[in-house]
Amino acid sequence: MPKTIIVSNRLPVKISKTDDGYVFSSSEGGLATGLGSVYKHGNNKWIGWPGIEVTGQHDRENIRHQLDEMSLVPVFLEQEEINQYYEGFSNDVLWPVFHYYISTYTVYKQSYWEYYNIVNRKFRDEILKIAEPGDVIWIHDYQLLLLPSLVRAELADVSIGFFLHIPFPSHEMFRNIPWRYELLEGLMGADLIGLHTFDDVRHFTGSVSRILPVTVSANIITTGERSLVVESFAMGIDVNKYATLPLKKNVKDHISAIKEAFKNSKLILSIDRLDYSKGILQRLQAFEQLLQKHPEYAEKITMYMIVVPSRDTVPQYAQLRDEIDKRVGNINALYRKMDWTPIHYYYRSFPIEMLSALYASADVCLVTPMRDGMNLVSKEYVASRINDDGVLVLSEMAGASKELIDALIVNPNNINEVCEAIITALNMPHDEQKERMQQMRALVTKFNILHWVKIFMDKLKEVKQMQRSMQTR
Ligand code: GDG
Picture 1 (spheres, protein in one colour):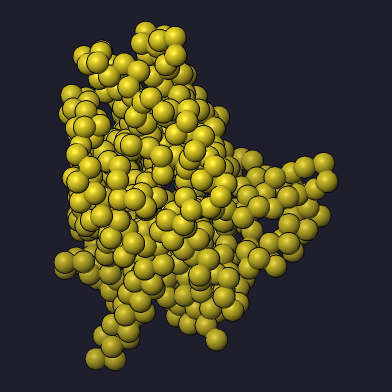
Picture 2: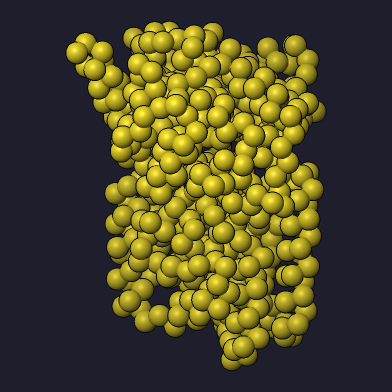
């Protein structure tokens, strides 16, 4: 019986070291939920890095054994590999270029590239230990761009799908990478390449046709004897989870507490991982402009801002965090009143119940990234609005803006426009809120995470059949 193997940089599990040994907790992320329907069945598996450095052989075997019971297979990385492949090539080269931050943030170090190759091969070796002809292998994201061809070279008769969770940049950006040819070559081993939006597909095929000796016809790439397909699959969320959480007793308690704490003001919610691509500083600028130009809103609005710690050992991220601290401090110092603080800022992660209560309570959700592959926060807010009210302000640079067209769509660089959109959102008549929210809720409900997994898997099967029928012609 052929099996399905999911491969991603991180396993869908958090491992922490305590005095009593290693502790495992499963990830609540959307990808883990969606793919849970896949890897937990039969002898299917999920291969990835457990997220911490484990050095001792005994500890490694112990962890491997425990993960095996959850259908998970670890790829152990040395500290130097984490530094160079993950923090280096993935997050210092690919992430900034793919998010259009080329000049300030990109470091093209040869050693990063070498380690990126080494670790992609490590992942291949782990796949080869368990994969057999006929299996389906679904590889995820920018950390593993070389993996499809590395696997294909060893195993001709498997189906390989690849999904990129971040934007694919235009050729003018992508061509800057010294290893552009090798990166695209690495992907050509896949049968199906999925991206979030049609624009990403267009950018990808544009780069492939300019850089590789292949033919591209619409979304079909032919390289030598093989043809592969590139298509957009907008990722969805676990709608059911977000629509039912607000009905639970403990979430209701949180909602009551939030409503009481902010009973005199409208709540504007902002939630992101710490990242320069999320436009946090620009968002603060728009909020400050609102307070400055419209003093009548003083004490009537509050911004609840969560920044989830991420990569903060990397200098640029630590610097961004300092900037945010400073900007929030300045705004609060300038505009606060005895009984009112304009921004409630938290630099930490919250349990899902509190997150759900915030989504359910916020009058406005501000999602204004400078670039974002999709942005799940925007969809989670919509799914949580079970009374069909609330307003989403959404950046046109987020993949989600192609679907959530009933949001107030803004250019995140246009501070005036964002400021005006917040005012429009705060004053939107209830009927209009309802009309917009109903449309968006219908959309996120239909195109949910399970739908996303299904259409990707179905397409992969279809591509495989297409390839077989071409071979027999
Ligand atoms: C990448 C791409 C693409 C946030 N705060 C808390 C918390 N979260 C959860 C949210 C959401 C997730 O984190 C963030 O997802 P995003 O999609 O917004 O952003 P990235 O992490 O950058 O994800 C992105 C995505 O991959 C999927 O393809 O959409 O474009 O960059 O699910 O709920 N979760 C909890 N506490 C928090 O405080 N529990």
